[in-house]
Image 1 (cartoon, rainbow, N blue to C red):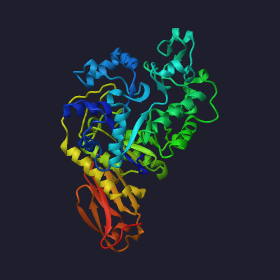
Image 2: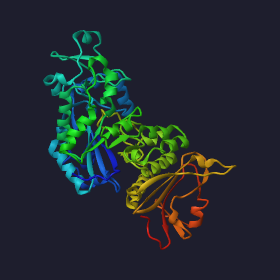
Image 3: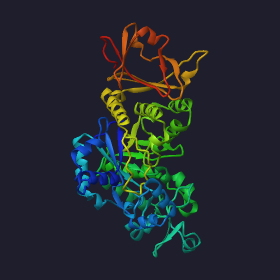
Length: 498
């Protein structure tokens, strides 16, 4: 098992798409055990701590058939891939038949070889887990109907979109409380003791072959949410919540296994309290895309310990591509902010090269898009610069941006710093389309009267400043629209901060 840092940098890869493109490049069929070393190097750029191989499990043939017959999905497929063919539609990676590595990807041996390649690079491996539902052709459906939310024969006749008659039992189709049931999955019963035990056993098996899991829609299994969704059909909630019971059992076998929750509805803190190492920070994503710097600043006033257990991102397989939703300068500014905040950071394969097409996860082929070489170079500098600096091993602090009576443009700046054995580091980001100025008081009392050198980590520009100024009125900054500073602060002849 690769020991991941406390705040890992994760690169999400759509496994089937990636392997298909690797096959085209190499001219031979490529499974996970056949990927050339240079291709592994491409998805593990400097600064990457873990790769999330999304979609390795055995997908459901029945779920694929349902997708093929869904007009809305077929329209979405054609919009993303105009020349889509039926053989390009692999089915949903979240409609899982069994937690066995798909034979088409190289099976268990292929995954073991992939993990060994990552381990040689000091990079961990994350996989998916879908706790809320399974495919209708999962062996559990026939062998363990007690794992599922049950219905009646009358339910199946009255509402076949919400209930599945298997011939042995009537089972509810999977859902969350705000949308219609999903037609291709069957709902597991989070209140069932047998299901909880089985979940722990499956996760224990997965823990043997990877370093951690990303749990899909994890909040759906929380007692309060599950009871609100299913009501009398599932009875009174158990005394213990789902995740503390399951995660405690798994961690007895795998104490170092990482659990990251896809989480919404402001339940991040509750899921952290229930045992998750990390939870999606969808609120920050929404604020960066659609709200003001004041809104982002308010979000970042939360306690550092809480923020260290969030997953920051600008895109993932569920969200539109950043290059599509953000202007180039705004994307770069948001990326600098994301990369220098506490918490895990999640980057999506294709994000670094400016891909714009949001590919439905059902597809294993995507359209050709020209790579943005300048954007790729920016991301390489950003990830490697932050990694080499060691800044994220220190303590993080949000800083004030002070304006003056006739200029409040500083409210559009977000400033923060890291302090630790690696040194002192300052990030300032202009989250607006206009120029912004402010003075930023720095928290380092040891600056004293010495002179200090501020070095840009992304382009090596250098600025000299006196300690008296930095401690007194503060560092003066003047940034263009969506401009950034990412600075190390080193005294002339002084030691790094401890």
